[in-house]
Length: 155
Image (tube, rainbow, N blue to C red; front, side):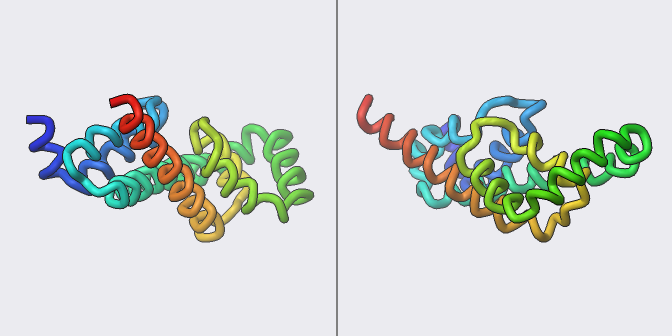
């Protein structure tokens, strides 16, 4: 029954799983944990990775939105913090995009930890979307192919 559901859900199932998992405060489990279910059901690795990238990017976008909405509140309620954040990111503006990519690609931590401060600092979403997507592609490819290799080796 689970296999039939996964086969029928295909990429949309991967997107939903990744979106829910991408909201780390709801399900603090990486989406790639569910990759073996999709792969065993015959879904292509590339489809699984694409679904995970789309789902986590949507969840990350929601995290950015929360930071963007809270910017005005943070600026008025915590001016010292936001000023330090602006100063720090202003001094290191050349590193923001490469660090964002590296964080999304390699960090096993919630992506909101970097996105919300960037939103509070006023970084535009359209500037951050490319490193977000590329980092998610690299991250999910690494994990899904890694999980697949481990499962083939073990079973």
